Image (cartoon, rainbow, N blue to C red; front, side):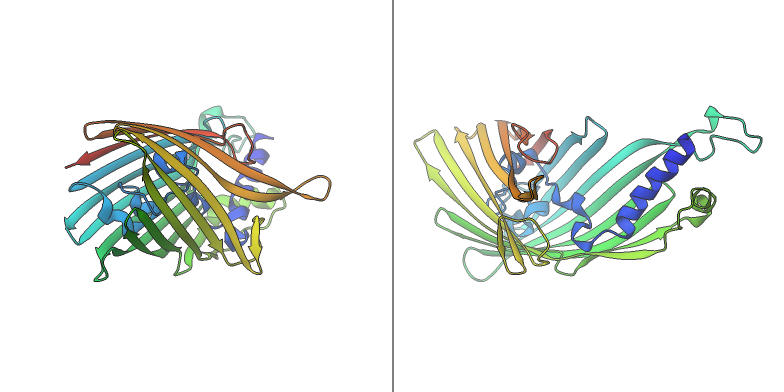
Length: 352
């Protein structure tokens, strides 16, 4: 039974990537990076000014203070079963250009492999149990440059993706993002086009490891396949408000535009779906930060045949000590979303 259970689990993992609709491809790249913007509900693409700009908006890498900036984040989902990690660095080449590097990994580790549990003589051999990981890894190489128009900046990402389910299946992928950022007075605007190249994953499967088990269970062997992540556009705006000498607040609004016409969004316009994200950050003397945001608005089909509104409120807190920033975010406060809540912690160091 354990052997059959493992085969079924592997089949679910492989079939989900081999035959899934393209709109769900590489969804681990949509989770987020850094507890700061996550605490704002995923809003803030137009205001990000640390190493996570390589993930959120590469054009904003030029707004990172100092010569170099580092950022790390860890979070866990499904009671610690799945782990999500991020690491990023931004480096200013000169006053007009910056580069960045981001690494993301979402994985379920230590999955028992019981394919060899029973030996050729029919004996159960627990010493033959091994383990494997089902992991998604993304590497983003970013570049940003000032344009001739005052306040205008441009940036781009080149993405390399590696996904694998142990030695059973693996995929390599490649994609490109492009971004613009514009600042005037206390206002900031941005446009980020993700996966403008149509980010692809080319899957291959190890039939030598799977053939016998799949034949015994009556399943068809998967074939090599190609999946494509369709483009999306993120339009964002933010503004700073100074309340007094010690207090200030930044408000942010992001709109994610998708074009496949098959999503449960609250603002569908023909084939275009609009997902809004709203957030804010309260700052006290540049060392204490409180954040609040709402995102992931969805119309989810209910039992009564009507769509129910789903949303995800997030909270965040940040502390700065000299050049070190520690940020915390709690996602899905009140369990109002179908997404799982998570505690996120990130660490940032700025080299002035």
